[in-house]
Amino acid sequence: MVSTVTSYTDLRNRAATGTGYDGVVRVSAGGFYGTGVLLYGGAAVLTAAHLFSGNETSATVHFETATGKQDVASSRVLIAPTYDAANSSSDLALVWLSGSAPTAADRYQLYRSSDEIGQTMTLVGYGRPGTGGDGAMASYSGDPIRQKASNVFDADMSALKHQLASGMGWTPLPGSQLTADFDDGSAAHDALGQFLGLHQTGLGQSEGIITSGDSGGPAFIHGLVAGIASYSASLSQGDVKPDADGLVNSTFGEVAAWQRVSYFQQWLDQSLRSAYANAPSKPEEVQTRVSEGNSGTTLTYFLVQFKGVRSSLDQILSVDFATRDGTAVQGQDYVAASGTLKLYPGEVQAVIPVEIIGDNKSEPDEVFYLDVTHPVGGTFGPGVVTLTAMRTILNDDAGWIA
Image (tube, rainbow, N blue to C red; front, side, top):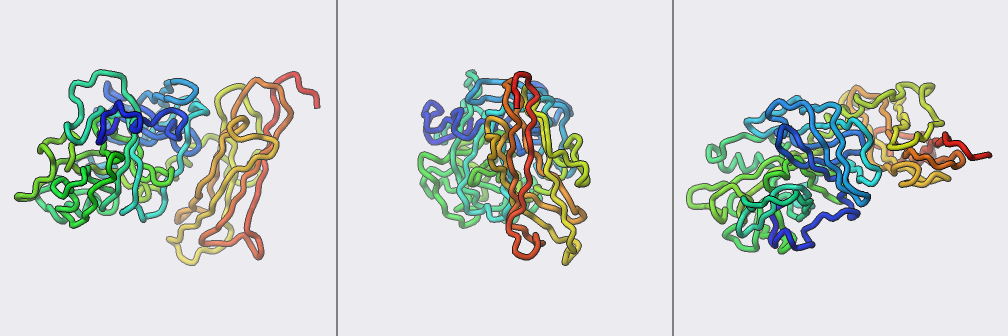
């Protein structure tokens, strides 16, 4: 539930349904739970690898949306191949859903720039409630509540290791973890101000930090997933002891770490792409007319191909994309999608998945569009600024006469 400045009963801390956080989920595995976030395409949840430290190979994902609560079992779990539990590095896991995610659940794109440090983020999770003054509530026995707070990504976690050396018993993978401290406005509890000279004394009553149960929860920058909650720590160096009580319990003066999503975006993108069912690999396999189905969602794919020449073998190409209504309406007939598609070294093509929403309502065939813009590393051709493709959603319910 996130440790905050004020009590968890303060509704300002609540990540209520219908406010943009309905894709932040609770993930149960092996008798424990953490938090996760539903990614673009709606097929998989991103969470922390250490939730599966007991070698669990399955999980249950609990959704809480404006239309109610729903549990969806996993079909498989993929741990980041470079996960290093001893150093909390690459602490990421993808949980694929065995069925459709609720259409009311938000889907999130990744924060892909490497400028997170210094930016304010919003952390969301189902962890144990608490406050900076008292720490996480050891006696809380109520239902998990989805809470939110704000903080600032102050530094790369490896900068703390460089400063504290043996005073920090693990070695983060450089560039892969972001850290923030829990400030109360005082210099005494400004951990990263004292350790690294990064004097930022908090965001007032908006400030917060993660607690037990928030592991795997997202930190958003501009609505994009920039970090995945991993761990918190109480650190000291000589007489410098910023933690309010010296315990790892999410009080003022502690620090927390998030796995840096931009660092892992290639693994995330390519892992998701490898699991798309029946995705086209050449233009003639693309289905431009798709059935809507009777319930849940199904995927239709748009294929993006690059036929130019890269200036270097390690060049990354990218385009932006966004769906657009025709006679089909987002939220009713399909799930809106927008973001950036990257082609990594060795890739010349990739698909963009869009979810079609099934129903039993008789209606005419409907169309929607996908616009592709802003190529980086290549061009669309002289004078071309936008590429557009259309999909027709075929009515498969009786009763409509064209």
